[in-house]
Length: 225
Image (cartoon, rainbow, N blue to C red; front, side):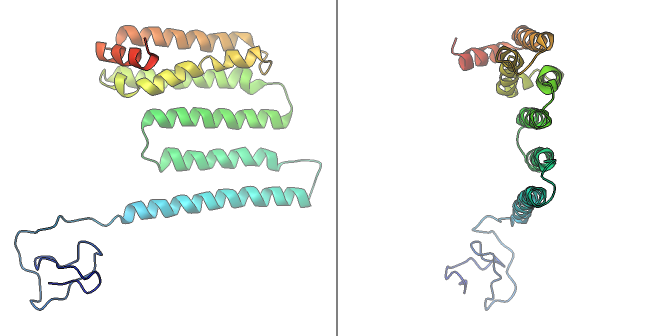
């Protein structure tokens, strides 16, 4: 049997062409039951729908930001409310696109959400022009909470230590960021920065003691010890 669309020869047992997925109209009528020479490929309609939804989501986010800035420029110039709306829209896009729709690793989702939420809060803090409440209090506690969350997930099953090793190491390194922000003057609260750094060190020491030998070897390889 020959496909009229592709021009390739197809086994008569197939009702559709394995290349173009179009129906085959042969002389034998209905396809006979037998061994198939070609594997059955499922249509990827779900992936196409997800990609289309992602594009629409990006379009809506860009449109909302663009319209808000345009309305703010043409309207009241004294209050730049669009500067407060932009980070919220971007974080909502990140939350839906990467956390809800994406099939990324759970550890990656936690790290991305931590960075996205911290960036949104810092943006709002700078736009408001107030004291650095985001870097002084909120961001250090967010980093400790994210590290604790992955630690709890790893403790539920020992096999997950190596699975989350890279993400946990990333969060441990991020635990020293509040201390760096305090050093450059972007934070005025020392005890929260020190608490985040100490918690990162305790987490690193604890996971080296609790985890198996395979995890410790993996950490040595990552840290080039």
